[in-house]
Image 1 (cartoon, rainbow over the protein chains, first blue to last red):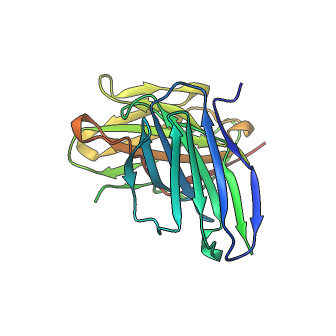
Image 2 (image 1 turned 45 degrees about the horizontal axis):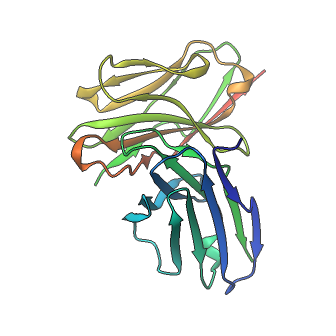
Length: 112
Length: 116
């Protein structure tokens, strides 16, 4: 069983479109995260939720909106996609703030 | 602001060579330290972590790391690398204690290429 699963794995879309990436974890963790990995492989946190409550909102454009319907799910919706949004987006979860993160397999988003 | 610096961006070794990857962080308080590995096309996996106690920590696949508080360093080592160790290695930090929000700050990553 996949612990942190993201869909889709690949997403190719045109500028200006709206898209969503879904994330689910079956580990029973309270905290979930979205990280962005750019073309130079640098990883930066975007958001975190703890038990459906927004905890971290880094300086991310408001075109990005996370939604956590329950503590096992954290989806990422992106409006008006831009070329610079092309990256790999990783979902992760952890049982507590002091615990290591468990990462999903990533979603490679390509905006053309 | 907190930051993590990995000195080696690209390392090329032959099999059986010893490995040491440098990691320094800037944060004055209690920290939790991690090394993650990302094999080609895969997600990040935890190699090892340090929270407290013995500063020499052992991880999976023969990796170890040493926390030197006075140097703000957490270098990763392996005595003898294998071709299968070819991957991207990331050092990461989050502040421990009550100010911790779980936010991991990553270094830029080190690409390790092991030649057979």
